[in-house]
Length: 431
Image 1 (cartoon, one colour):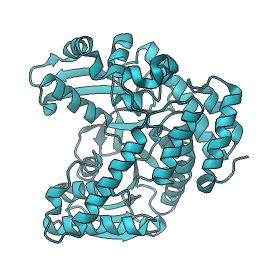
Image 2 (cartoon, rainbow, N blue to C red; image 1 turned 180 degrees about the vertical axis):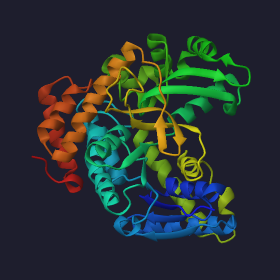
Image 3 (cartoon, rainbow, N blue to C red; image 1 turned 60 degrees about the horizontal axis):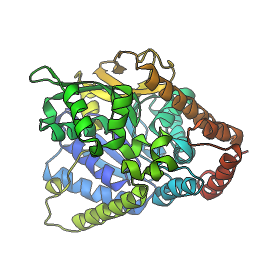
Image 4 (cartoon, rainbow, N blue to C red; image 1 turned 135 degrees about the horizontal axis):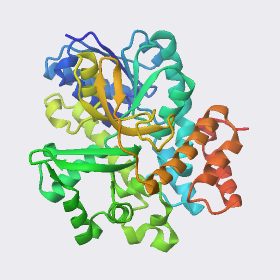
């Protein structure tokens, strides 16, 4: 039986929070654990806690569940700390795409690269660095599992400025495997996929049917030729580079400006929905309303009503707690695992759970065309991290001038002026 202590900072992210609690409740290897839910939004924290209590009762789970609003109260003796924070919420997210769009930067999601990803980083990195620094004092051996975006920048900041071990988790490859399986009428559990790159911009190096040993890539390439409209951006990049990028086209276009440029009719030629964020916010509200109704219905079976998963956090914690070795996609320092990217860079690669933690697995060099694009992104992220920590405006400008969407120094400065003003309540003033 586990005596593991898990702290979830940002538990009021209700949709993720309840799924994570459900995952932990249903994971036998974490029975006996303590789970502390933390959020400054007491209403949302209460919602997740109430549903969590129901999950524990329904499953007769041996799980000690508690809550608080101050992570400093929760962190002592923690074994795992999970961060899923988004300062500014949906209002800030919407500005992250709408303000840049008014300056010619067309993003669909806007939480990773460019001005949207930059200002999300400015809002998020200080919070997570504060958590990591407190961990250094009260639980220095705990593993930080980060879900907050921009993933690459957040994990790099923790690696660069603290001694806390951090991994980042994302569902991108899992979603891609399920999509490929559906299109090719295969069971997703029968597909083994290997990928490498950076978060939201990883590339599938191998796709294999593990029941037959068949290389599935030829079928994927054939489908891309026959049905290019099925996923226009990913399939076009497959033709150009020979590898399929993982994830939805809405994320991929943050890294390559062409697909939402005026030449591409601002994304229309590639079926990119520039109203993605507004629609996503509406869906989030619907899900929260659903959870509110669920929490207030004493007769509902909560375990059955909640669908989906918080990805692989519970599985990884189970493996590390109980000495199991399994492979997961993780964001970790490169340390030569992708040979043609910098050692200090945070990359997304397969990693294996071991008694000494999560270890990245060696992969082959990425094709030069892909590696070159990723290297430019990593340089941009490095400047964003430095700007977030030093609060230097000129570093923010340097980062924006690397971004491929930028066409004008004057335009970049005008955009920064407006973004800094819109975010002053969250980040204060930069020098």
